[in-house]
Length: 90
Length: 60
Image 1: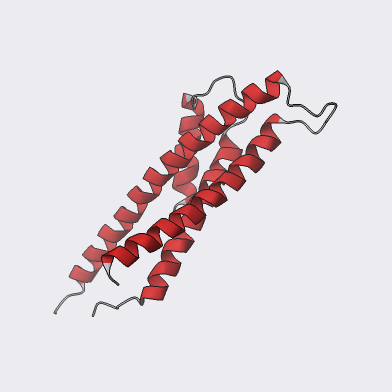
Image 2 (image 1 turned 30 degrees about the vertical axis):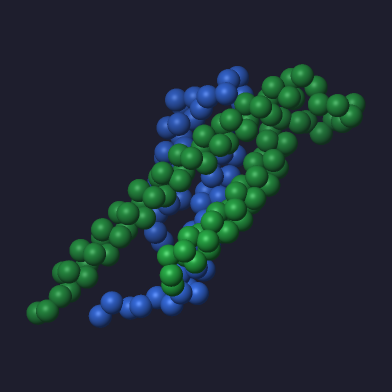
């Protein structure tokens, strides 16, 4: 696959991933910050503040998990390489 | 003896990885974060997150 096409594909997948993240974050923060009372149509001050902080934390965690997964998959790759070398010519 | 992974498979693999990434984030967030006194992730939450990610990220 030519690199430009690969880059384009990766970008598309990333957008898809971000959209999915957005939906999960919205759902999670709604659950955590907005109790199902619905006494009024507007978000209260407390709810707004909570949502702001929730989003901040969620994005932070998203970033950390990214790093963690990269770390784990690199470990896996290392292991695979060593296994392949180990089972080389007898 | 390197197995050549087809292009489509590589793309699907990457897509699956991204899906797992998002689910991992969501699960760890829901389990480890209960309140929002501040915008920052608390040290206790941080420990919980590392532990959780470690467990969930293990190959089967």
